Length: 594
Image (cartoon, rainbow, N blue to C red):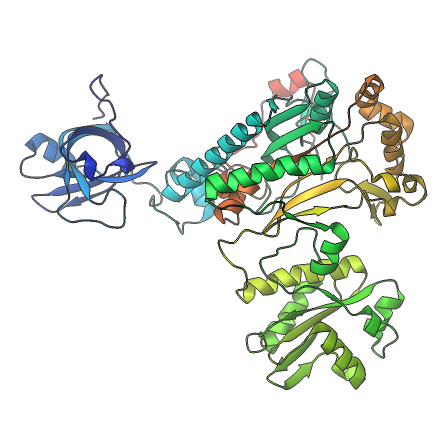
């Protein structure tokens, strides 16, 4: 029979807070029973809340009715216990409260519990689907509770820092006008305006720019955003951004404020002092050295351009790539010859094919015994030149990809990280931060035969490259910058276009006619008529940032109620059908397609 709390039932402390200094005090605690141990004349119950465990004790001095009640306690019962703190007879050095226990003299069962479908323990090996179906139980696990509390702490640090820097916390709408040039929007039908639709915001981008036009100067928001895109471990259909925008600033001004936040965050949350300013790489340098615009700097294995040697060589795969405007590049896995078998080398060849590479050439020097997939096609001098340029030494393995630059970078950039994982080169508890700048403004889609914005269509082009917007758009650099943490993009931003003239040029480069631009972005172009300050900003992915700081691979572990890969939520079983009446009010009919 469940009992109710009374005015006398006031929690003294959380379970995990009791120490030797509390010995002799009469206290009240509340929480969930982790486990009960019946030793005949003694009963112990580990009581758990979000701060940890404390042991409840029942012995020969305990009232029989209370002792009998304790005997019936099972895992996940919700309890309220009064008693006196004493030193434990058996010290547990594995938990902070392990020196003390509470001798209970009053016990209430606030709620009984059925046996849960899985044990509430750290690092549960239970299938994710079962955990997510019972997420309310999953969230009781100490490791997940720490993750969620860490997220709360990081959010609080962000709010405090940006407030101290003069930013104004402003909410922007969640029902907005659908706009192109991003991922697919989530569409919301309007009941009042039948046949018309809102979109859920992919970001507050246009609104925060309009707030700069409104004179707020410094805007900040922890914003909920939505994108209807295919999911991965680091993506969710709904996610959260630490979002900011500033007026009358240059790229360096934005970077300085963001670096101040990162320094504060690492100091307060991780106890680490960052060395500022953070290093910077241009997009071109990052791609040339690491094959990625979000390079992981915790290990070496940089790319080396072999195109000058490959040009005109006797191996058509290498020579042809250079003749067709591509390149030949390689990486070296130091001291890996005895760690990578021929079978593993072949598997790595298949791995790079998933990045559009046609194949992977390799060279293995195992203590002077050389084997290679390409050496027989080259002269001795060409092989020697490649070995020297790559810096191959006994014990090393070299990998080479020849193709269009985009393919070479993708394949070797991914291979570099895969090799680091397999060879154990990634240092744990090391945080490597850098800025990547000077991104291309546009990227060309062969499939669609048109340019798309690399970031978004409101990114300011480099002033020197503005004339190229109409003559050679692919060569235009942007004033855009990403902050990269351990090989993941933690945040990104740009200086924004603030003149109607340049914005119209950008729209034309994207293939938007004046009529289309006016229809989709007329409100922004209209606003530009009334005095627009130069402005720029940045957004951190809060979910990803928290996961990176906690060393987690899956952002679902820092989100209270995440979606699975098909964008459904297993606990509430959404999305779900709605009734015909609701559809009729919206003027919508569901049509099944074959």
